[in-house]
Image: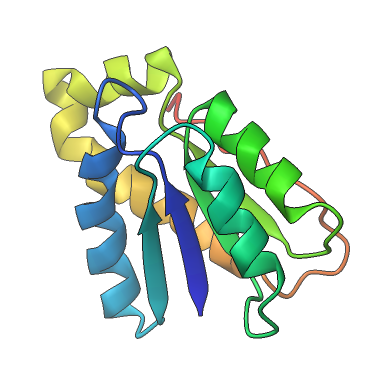
Length: 135
């Protein structure tokens, strides 16, 4: 199962819009998942701490800005749970997603990025990946 920690306020609320694209993609691949939506500052930290103690947690994907990433990393410490990161708070990503030509391309681009993250789940040699939306 893939767990997502999502800050719906990231990118002026655009992070929430990613969820429908991601959910559709995961359903196509029959991948089980669970979304945790943050509700206040420090909530991502608390969610990460709770997930850290569960043996069934094998992968977490963060959707948010650098603050959400910071909270999750600190909430998981010390842990060896692999993380994926979709930078929803990054202004350029939000700007690109809103452009008219990107509105049509964005779902397929996000799907490819999710495929890259999922393909790394069983790679013992990759400690991080940067997913650039500038295509």
